[in-house]
Length: 177
Image 1 (tube, rainbow, N blue to C red):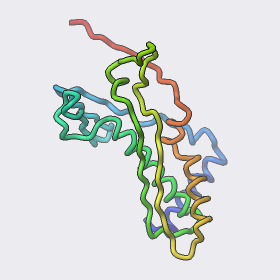
Image 2 (image 1 turned 135 degrees about the vertical axis):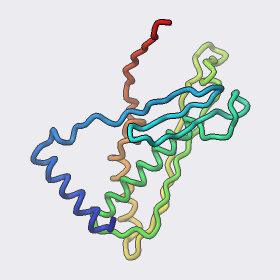
Image 3 (image 1 turned 45 degrees about the vertical axis):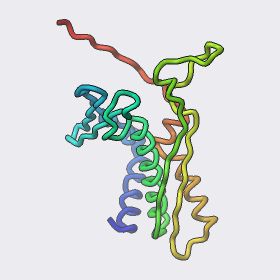
Image 4 (image 1 turned 90 degrees about the horizontal axis):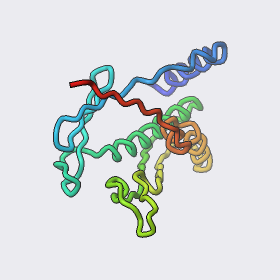
């Protein structure tokens, strides 16, 4: 879709949400993960799309698929890039380049449930996360592009979920044998 087409679509949706704020609230599509043996898991979207994950060899996996942690970083990078592209289109900015790289640093001892020497548990999740954004748009000042990226990052749903550490409601079903 063209920049103008995206801008028109965004304005139309924003207009609806201004008139009917409740229209903005929706249940997100669930992700259903099924263990398929070893350390392999296949996760399916309700529309049928699937993605497989596995763990590296040193953690008992085959190492031939991406890890769940990489998918989290991929989601962050993709969501951030999408939000930047949306903001640029809404402002009539035609991007020539947009790359977002999400990185993190983790301690695998946390995944294994290990503790520090003083007894404190090692965190299972990333210890830190970072985003690197490269972008250009002919005729648009670097400061304007930086502002666009910073504003977009404040409205990226995946980034927001990571930064606000949303609590997870856990439901466990154990079917009888």
